Image (cartoon, rainbow, N blue to C red; front, side):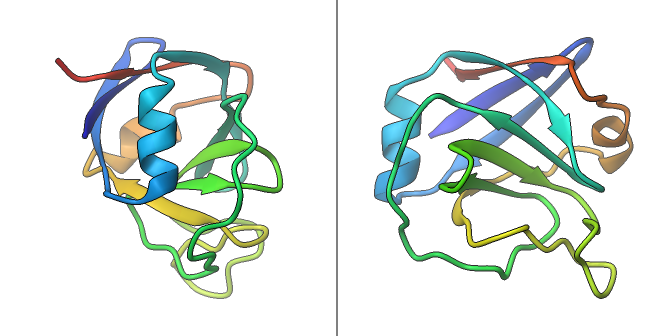
Length: 122
C-alpha cells in the first residue's frame, strides 16, 4: 500500500504495512490535515479513532505510525524531546503502520501549521 505525502513543495513516498490499522487508514485516503512538529517528528490529526494494535515505544528513523492518544499519523525522522539518544521516541505508545525513506533534510523543513496531504499512490 504505497502512499504519497505532500507538504508545501515537498513530495515524498511511504509504504504502509499489512496491519489492520494501516489498512483502515489507507481505506480513508486521501486526507488533508495540518502538520505539527515535535523535535524530529511530524504528526497530524487524521480524524480516525482507532484502537491500539501492537503498541510500542520502539520506533526507528523513517517509521510512519498511528498515535491513538491523539488520533494522529506520525512520521519519525530523528530524536524527539523525550529521546535519550539519537533515535526517535514517541510521547506514548504508537502503532507502526509503515515506512518512508525520504531525505531527513526535507522533513526538517516542515513547520507547524503547514498543510499536509496524504493520498494513495496510483
